[in-house]
Image (tube, rainbow, N blue to C red; front, side, top):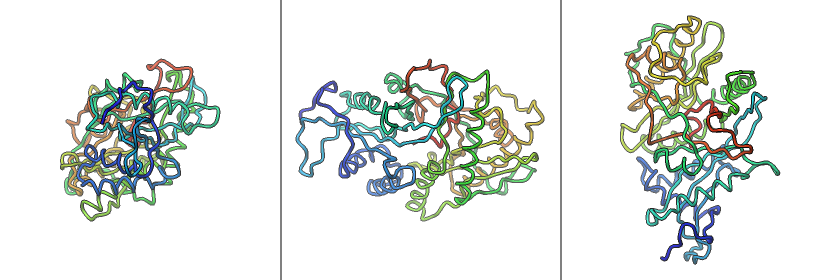
Length: 396
């Protein structure tokens, strides 16, 4: 097959048909199937596009095609590159104004046909996608504010195309059995799927309240993906499918909660990520919410002191430690390699070191790098955009 140049005007980024979605997913299976075989992977993808987050136009499949090429016998077009976008609810606040709700898109499964790599088709696809997302699924007359993706190929490729890499750190804890419990204060209460909706509503209300507060230290633009129930349940549908296929087992626990003496609560919601081998099996904390935590938007570093300087924060640290230990026990039960939390706050680092004194923050440079492109006008300086709640729940 004669291929056009990646700069050819005949190339178009178009929505895939049903059969082209299957063709695209089959190509992507070589990179993304993990422990599944190709047929299982295709079943999982069909399952994921029938969730609250993705149905009714929530997910869109895109393919880069040459409009002059003849279709195949089944009318499918030759796929040069492909990706998908998922519609996400978000909040954004400019110059201290009250936050407004907006729609952004998360980009995932970016893939170039292996037979056509090295020709610039992936780059061309992302250039065309950026143009489409300027207005895709926005209200008439309005444009998009931003889009996000998580790079598994380092920082440079997407940064050159306008998706700047943001904070990419995590802290990991080893699994432990219930016999190895360390904390002396009350353990975290296990959460189930029935708890998710209510906690997500509370979490969103708390987020809106925090973003509405006047803060002279705040950046010009503050934004956050909303950790709503549809997003959390999409992650859970993913883990439940894999757990059934791989182990014929159903994950019942979805997180843990602990109370602070002042009546406030601390909770986390987790998901089990299954990779091609045990080292890639991780219990990921999707979202950790600490009511009243004024450090939630502050990045932590390995230089943080192991002592709580503000004694009023001690109950928060102990409560976080309680739910992290519940996560460690759950990880052990599922033979996972670690518990991971993305971009921890200072209080979470203190809690992690309460459980493991040697716990260190890891900088990621190649995989799962959160990246954001600004689509709106006027475009602020990148240094004045503050991405809040940059945690695992946003990933897609």
